[in-house]
Image (cartoon, rainbow, N blue to C red; front, side, top):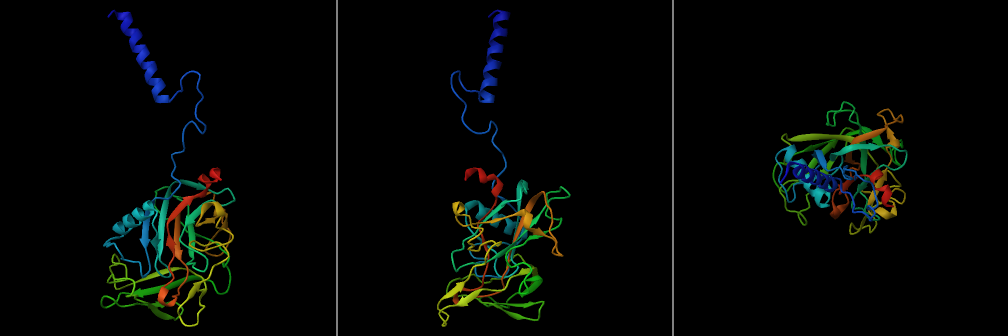
Length: 310
């Protein structure tokens, strides 16, 4: 092959490679609808930074975690499978991270999937954080997203419950709070067989969880303990059957506005965007044979990326 022929061949091959890499269509055809470069951001917050439930009937069931890192990997796998992660009783929480900034456009920005149905609500407080120092860790300031019960006398900010490790397997978990009350998380041996409801990755004999507590709305409607209703709250909580924020087109998702963020002293906070979400069981109550009220989380999503699908 002569030198000029080789140059022509190389030029043709280079042109072919450019066409393949850029996805150019053949002459006379139209490119597919949609953006030229798809958004690489994930709708769901798939990275779990912390998972520390309060004692509850689903804690340690079907899994054994000896470290926080193992517990986080378990929770990540559950969320990836579309399965619920149970936060146990009051104060139990999970912290998840998005792979991008979730923008505050004044409307609904976050969608959280739970497993509530009418008269079976187990509300969770939602907290948000911006990665102000840019280190990828949830070590800046948490802001609560106010819901319908925020500011009411029966809603307690800074509520704390200390849980105590049982002396032996199959026993209830004792607790005391910072308001002089105490009680137990019942061990439901008829339905669960794990040794302890106390998280196995907690090293000490007790631990304390703090957060916002809502007044319980569980009612024994039968009067005999046979039928309990965990009644719903108007709006603003995860795993809550809300007529307001469960938008019909997205099933069991509760929807949240970053613009509802408030500081510790109750002032509105203007957050342009957030990076982390924490969900915390908001009620300290139990409903007979049903057991403790515990928030369940199936997914945490950037609703902004879903709005175009409506």
